[in-house]
Length: 387
Image (cartoon, rainbow, N blue to C red; front, side, top):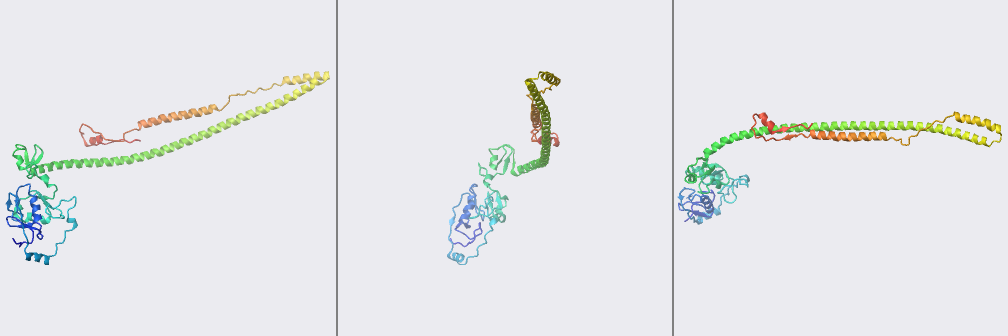
């Protein structure tokens, strides 16, 4: 059989490895194979052009082009069609056309009857041929195998509310007989209404959460400011305490120095008087020694009574010295003050740490439903200031 047709009905390009089917129409071998592969699950094979139905997949017959036709196409080739822009080719996340050969274009529609996706070029038969008028086109979707009943290999058109699953027409005869069933479109409409209510509820929750987020941000900012103020005040108070302790140290050092000076002056005065008395006593002792050596009895008697009278007349003052004197009382007082300060500071720090351990932010899950929006916010989001 000679070939008078040059264009494939499916790919709209020059025929490549042309084959014919019993109705006489001719297609590219790969185009026809791809087209009928998608019809294997139905058991019916249609001619893409005249829509003649074959219950058994025909065996296409290979054809050879006539010499003149071959010479015409190869000696005077028509200019090739401009390649599609790169953005029209299907990417990893795009739905690809099931008919395209080689590098596939993006699908623009999917047919729920053919269970195939088509690019703009290969979708034309669905718009131009009356055979496809009953086919249902939807926006391109992937995994068309999910649209088929795995048991009966028919399209899923119904929804069983009893079993909550999509079913085909044959499922209603046996597996889902007597169940509450509606069309998939009706169930979608009902679910769409419930979806709207659910979406409105979610949006309300989003609004509440956004408001809680803003309140939490404000609380965090307030916490940071409060902590910074407390830190600055504590630094100032501790600085004042250090200055007070330094001043107390200086006053205590001055007091110790003054007492030391007074004690030294008193001791030095006593030492000076004692030195003078020692000198006087040594002088008298010397006079008594000289008197004891005189040979003049009258002089001895007269001088003895005079020297003895002077010695008896002068009473030497007694000097009392405390051998255990020290500034231990001062150091003891300072030590007690230090211990008291440590104990007081530890106790106060424990009090601050105990009373200051507030839960800054907590999430409360109540089993009882809140009676108002304010109660809802109060239960769900609790914040306390640390200071």
